[in-house]
Image 1 (tube, rainbow, N blue to C red):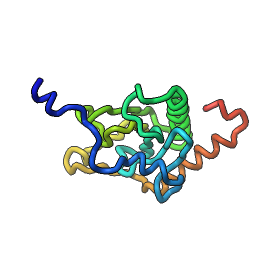
Image 2 (cartoon, one colour):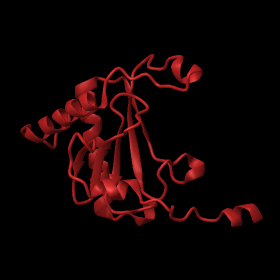
Image 3 (cartoon, one colour):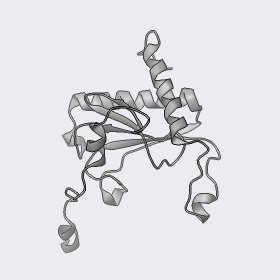
Length: 166
């Protein structure tokens, strides 16, 4: 218990919050920001686990579920669905990993700001490179991924009855 108490709550880092900084920027390829609403930010991961790796975050700095308003929770869920549909239409993955890491010990790379990872997966998409060279080989540049996903999201907005996601 002494070690746990000494470690304490993870508190704020000395560095500015990545997602708070990104939430102030306009969507665009340069920033990899796909969408910015009053409550939600959707962006490509600059260091993707796989092609099409998107992060969906609250725009407001919120560290836990108890910090999120009902409106934010609803919009986050809607954007997770939109991202899934856009990636499915554009890349036709066989599945997805959708994950949220709360706290350093849980694997959070950005502490104190809720964000979900949406990672498309295909049968056989693992290879020996991560094991032997600690490198992930991606068959598509981030610029191209941005173009494809932003086009798929825009097409969803133009469809009649856009509440229908499939």
